[in-house]
Image (cartoon, rainbow over all chains, first blue to last red; front, side, top):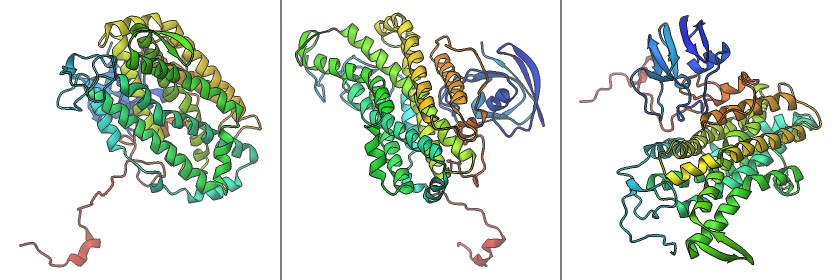
Length: 87
Length: 379
């Protein structure tokens, strides 16, 4: 299992334990950490997060991302990670 | 001014607004003002699919076993989607192409609208497969009051924009006689109509469609009508792209990255836009009542569908920088995400609903089952 440290996303700071089989967006939703999102396909960029520690497997997306940014709908953890809001 | 299909004026497309600038002449994609539209087009092209690729033969047996109230839900749902895609299969082209000013956006609009025609064809594919008399299902669309009522609100912004922009392109600004109506056309009023039309299309694709998606996927969660669900999954994948297109246009306008006059109009129209979301959500809730009038189905009822509508409406409003209308909540239909999520993340090719198979892909690995190659060598 992997640990996802959530650092102040929509007011929540907590640790989640996941198998790494689902997208980070789905994991956050299942743990009731609500996050802006829209297309769930990597097109719109609504669910952008900052990857503060660790590594993720990130799928193709249409949105240009800066260093350290990930789309929650397109990534899943491959190590323990720490994520936070961009703003 | 008069519209020309190929204006001789030399223009710098990098300095044009999205709409109501100079008409596009050369379809060139070597440089783009807004690269996102090019990316959307490429993605849409890579999604190309045909309904005939999907086997819906088991759906006929499943449909025969559905309860009468479930048949009503299933068919009404499809009839409504047929209406929505009939509108979307032609309207972006008719409404937006004559006034677009960027080649990459023109190309996206054509690609977008074409993909909607595939959706329309797929409904015929499904209906032919499951009922003996497909014609009756199509004929009923125009006789169903609940569908026609919503056709009005889906198409009224398009109609208004098309009427006035055609008059503008023929006669320019001024007061014109349009079928006996004295109508004053000025560019600002046209841009306002355009903004509301883009918003109305966003609501159509980002909110209204999702009621139907939820119903189709609810059947497939019970392992019935899975061929239909696989087609609807393809359609949902396309629609996620389309709604990103209109969201992107809206956000470019609202963020002041396009025409400054459009940005001012967007600010002026904010309360009207919020009312459009509210009205669409109410109409879809009434539709949910109509769908479930004869009874619920396992996993879905009118109440949960209404909660889902509020959830989706909030998400879509958030995505274009509007304050959500309803209280923040988690998804009341969490299982739907399994159908809406990108296949890139969840890969299990044996599952019915996976859409990421590669066409014409070759597996070049060799193992024991390929032993009949023997001592074959390439010299």
